[in-house]
Image 1 (cartoon, rainbow, N blue to C red):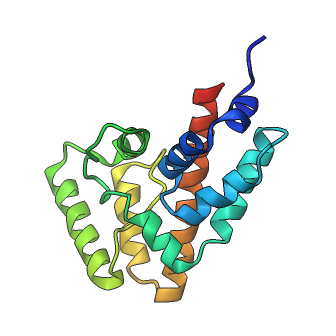
Image 2 (image 1 turned 120 degrees about the horizontal axis):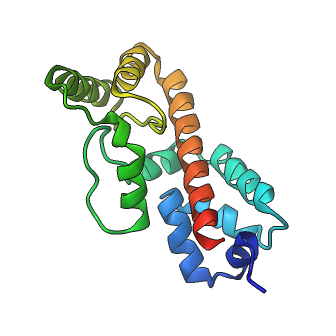
Image 3 (image 1 turned 90 degrees about the horizontal axis):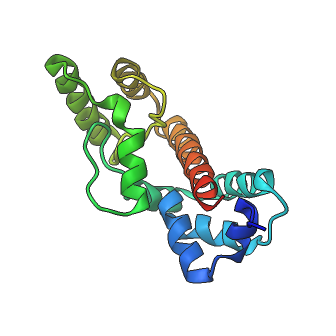
Length: 170
């Protein structure tokens, strides 16, 4: 009999689990919170724990997690799961349109100048025009509003990556 994804997740050695969870979200507090609730009865419980861990992150935790994310449109380097997932998630932001690429780069720089960190967006399923529109819209946010948006985008990214981790274990 083969092990289910959740059984495999529950059975992972602590060091392997910590590394896999860091690839989902680089904030140590997030990984520790998800790991601490093992064993899980099902996939929904794992995903719910990931969402709860995201909601519990403070701004310093969010900034730590963001430090592992490349600028939107940049090709992430590295060979680990996190780099591979970033490349896959950002595929839609790549464009052959030089003017659009330039506009994305400029929006990234303006955003970083305004908020002091990378523009984080759940890019999966979004085209470059939509990403650019979101960057421009979010430039109008105040600090508190933007922090809430960043935290929600991080939650969505971490959830997708947690789903991918479970799929890989299944």
